[in-house]
Amino acid sequence: MVLPVSKDGNTLHQKVQENQKKPKRSFKEAMNRSEAKPQAPRWSVFDFPQHKQTSNFRRERPKDKTSSEHVQGRAENRSDIRSVSQESQEISAISELSPAMEELLNHMENYLSIESQNGVSTTELILELPDPYGQFHGTVIQIDHYDTHPHSFNVLLMSPDTTAVDDLTAHLPTLLKALQTKLEHFQVNLLPPAFTKYEKPESLRKINQTERGEKKGEQKTEKIERNPFLN
Image (cartoon, rainbow, N blue to C red; front, side):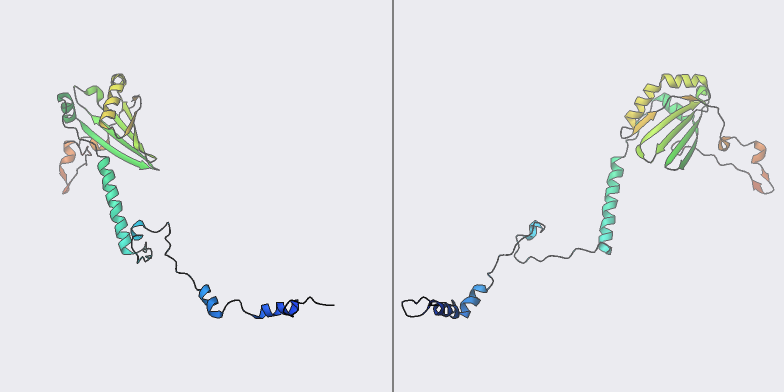
């Protein structure tokens, strides 16, 4: 087998071997090319905008949520939110009362009871009214409140007098409008008045004169529960 010969007298196989032995570039040139090029710092989208303008940016470690400073700051924020929510729910007080309403309130003796069970609060207010409001004597105002609807109330009027029930039914739209005007931040559901049997509360029964005297160094007294908002 005869191999082809080039012009300088070397065979093609010898030419290939010579080219393989000769390095194409020096070691120094290879190292210079392999050096990493300086790159500008890259910013992440999660970095804070105010830190992008500084050259010496240092990522800070997240604060410990269990630290005393963090817990104290969180408590202060909650107190601020609570105070704002309480201020937003405040209702303007009644500045003026009509003479008839003022006279009615002065003659009222109220028995107030509040019961709460399984997220349902029931408030009962029993009116003790002398003449000329005798027909409303013993009227019960029942207010039901559910924890699932904190800004809603159901109001039921019950009276042992059929005449009072008829009068309350006739003026029910006017009463509902007045409640919605004064309690504009709440939803009031006024139920139709109902008839009920009147039973005087034990705490409102007058004590006999004989029971008020001292007996064996002890004086019997009976607690009278009244509406704290009325004198």
